[in-house]
Image 1 (cartoon, rainbow, N blue to C red):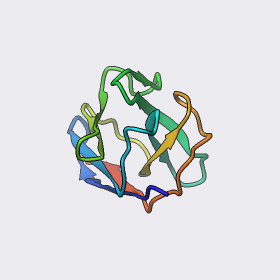
Image 2: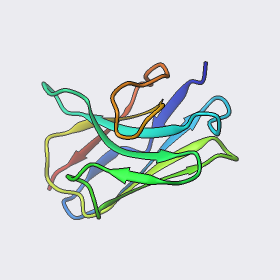
Image 3: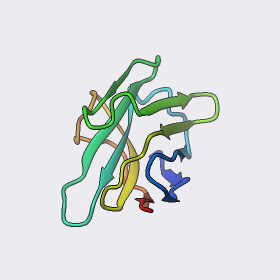
Image 4: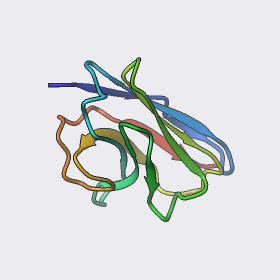
Length: 120
């Protein structure tokens, strides 16, 4: 079973940028879709962005145009570049694999996530 470890979160001012990383313990090329999710306190986990193993991407409407997901199958790493960050409730960002795009039906164990706080 592939394990994932997320990193790169932190405190950033509104309008700023962060780049999140998801390091997988095994070969992710065989995982059709890798995704980023986020969960704010008291809310359900939501899908943010998905990328297939050949690089096709899709984004939630709330982040479209600001976030970019990418994956490096050679290093088994998935990234989420977040620009123009908005002041929102802090959220923990997670990555996971799935068999379809923008789905919560994931196939890997959840990592510990990485917290993102956008605040002045």
